[in-house]
Image (cartoon, rainbow, N blue to C red; front, top):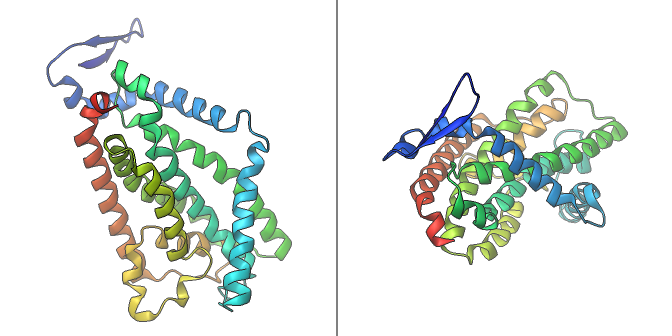
Length: 283
């Protein structure tokens, strides 16, 4: 099956052809971009519709987590911040990329099962579904980022020229989450009990990632291998961009982190593409 768009009528004609859907898969992703927009907008509307506190939850969740980490790691464990940056600001700068990562992973992992009716009836590249659900995380991220900006203003933390690199690390955070998200999405279709594993894995991942502390506290002999955690480089990069030169990137670990993200992304896309042809039967 392949899709051709007439330049005169602007109508899409679906032609049945053996192997066509597989051969033209990546082109179809672009041709179905309107479906991506529709699904993303629908998911955002459903996410915030009929909620008591609405978008306020995008502020309350990272704020409460930041307060807990500040008390546990900053006050009780006496861990140091990056340079002279106030501990709450350092934690919040790490909390935002983690929330972006975890929300994409959580939303995408259940997206195909949630759209079972659509998957079983209509042809389109299934990759659109988890990618569209990830847009919710970007909306939450934008709301939470405003709160971080206000905190930085309150504490007098001023970013320097490194701030211009922040969009690159936002993209890196999305790529870091999409690999595991696509893999978990495919597993969740075949094994429904994975929906119970994902929240536990994310909870554990938050404590082993440098969210509530600086990665500089990791012993030097383990610092390089710490880059195997896909979010370490992302969190360190956010702080490097936002904290006015008080935070530093450990390049050996960051280089390993980039390789890890690329490997997980390739693995996630490959496994998703390999299994998606069976989604309609399994759902």
